[in-house]
Length: 110
Length: 115
Image 1: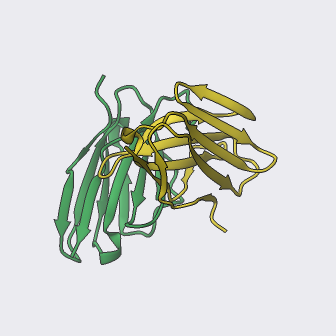
Image 2 (image 1 turned 90 degrees about the vertical axis):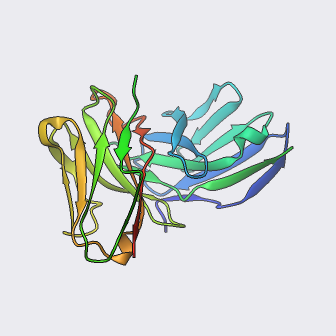
């Protein structure tokens, strides 16, 4: 079992729709959860971090964490073509080592 | 504020040669990390420095890889001798001393191709 699992996609949504990206993790002791966006050929860019159960909203992005289910998600409202990228889920178990998922490719169709 | 920088951006070498990658973290960031992404796979942790000390090098694949951070500023990652499977993108990231590993800032990466 992979430590952090994501559906590789591609996930295709029309412009203006809600994109829902999901991630599960195996280490129940995980404490910090991150979503990074990576455009092709570029470095990962942190877009959301979440540390406690529930929802965290930042602009068009909402991160959701459910530690009991070991599940974290990212919702992108009013999706734009510029949101087309690979979204990486990353988990930190309390030390400094961050475990990444393989990423979900998102395409937003104009 | 300058971000994390890496040099070179691309490197093409032959199997058996040596390559040294460099990372300059964000000024004042005590934590420096090396990651690698092999094509089609997830980004994998290699190691973590706090200042000049190696805190966790559990992700280093083998003893052909040597990372240093003399003086606690920039870091180098040397691969000697390089093998075909070392090809990939090597990312460096940094974070402030108080962040506890949270919210790492990534450099643009070095794309290494071993022929």
